[in-house]
Structures are given as structure tokens and as C-alpha cells.
Image (tube, rainbow, N blue to C red; front, side):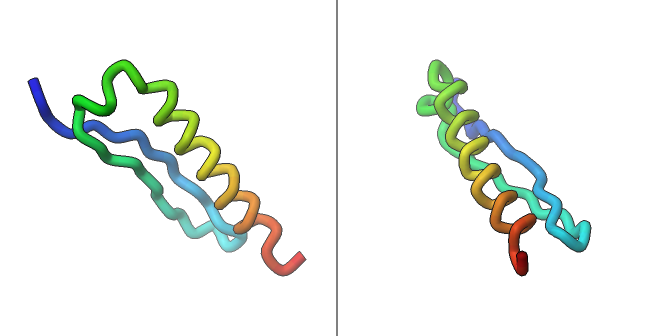
Length: 57
């Protein structure tokens, strides 16, 4: 069955505002590569989170 799959995360900035990031892709590109897509989103999350939490320091 074909469809759309996604991985996502929520980021909180210094003021407590929440932001969501996600990576959506066709299921044919997702299944069998779940770890790769999860790791990629995790790395992006860490970069953005670092930016939000170190801004103005």
C-alpha cells in the first residue's frame, strides 16, 4: 500500500513557544529507512534547538 509517512518533533524556544518540525515522504521511500529519517530529523532538531537556546548568549 502506498501512502505518506512522517517523522516529527516539537521544539520549545527560550520563551516557551512551541514549534513543530516534520519530514514527510512517500511510504515507498520511508519503509526500510526509518532509522535514517529519524536520525536526520534528530540532527536537525538538535541544531535548531541549540540555536533557540543559545540565541542572545
